[in-house]
Image (tube, rainbow, N blue to C red; front, side):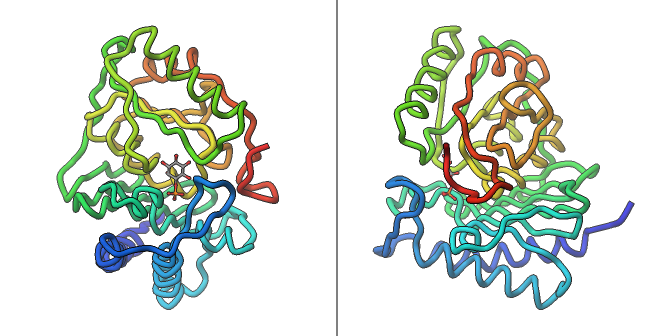
Amino acid sequence: MADWSDCLNFGISIAKQARKIVLAAFQQQKDVKLKSSPADLVTETDQQVEKILIAAIRRRYPDHSFIGEESVAAGERLELTAAPTWIIDPIDGTVNFVHRFPFVAISIAFAVNKETEFGIVYSCVEDKLFHAQRGRGSFLNGEPLRVSGQEDIHQCVVVTEIGAERDDLALSTMTSNIFRLLQLPVHGVRALGTAAVDMCQVAVGGADAYYHIGMHCWDIAASAIIVQEAGGVVTDTDGSDFDMMSRRVIAASSAAVARSIAQVVQAFPCRRDDLEPSNTCV
Ligand code: IPD
């Protein structure tokens, strides 16, 4: 098995540099632009951080490929090939960033042969650096992570998001999913405004499950391996195998909880990330 530790260590070092840029801009007034919907925002900092990350990686690894949120928004083709590929969200939680709600993350995943080898999620304001490497465990600021192991859905805190999709079908599906979960009941439903940090709550055992429909591969590629390497289960919302391009995910403390979430949650139709155009729900 190839050892990608050099890439992982480099990814961590550039995430630390990028965090300084995110923190410096966090309290400032931002110039905000809209992307696919009035709730899908981008700032100059998102674009700047992505450019800096990609330039640094390209200098060190000139043969590697990239899938970057803002590069795709600017028209680049989104394609995951067998090549070593860095999947980057420069600021996950851009709405939080704009409003200074203190959960924003740099998310970097690295895939080879379409399989994720490592993931890095840096929750910038909290100063929490999560990382995982395939077969080598998950860590928060260097300390090993473990999911809660909860198997009973009624004892769960469940994290989800009302994402950027605001058409009637998406909204009614998302709110009725939450309604049905609360009816079960579960202990609570939470949302932090960043898919990457939400999923890391499952990895640390602070939440027992997370599900989301409509996010993109760059939001969850890194945190998916962080959950898996912490002993958690990651699937599609219909219970089938996880596919980072499907725009549907469940991350859970156990297979039993993942199944319970899959029984309750319904999906609304979303165009796969690897179809063109990549970032619109249909
Ligand atoms: C968004 C966040 C949010 C989720 C959206 C994502 P961004 O990512 O992860 O929690 O609900 O679906 O698009 O745009 O801030 O990188």
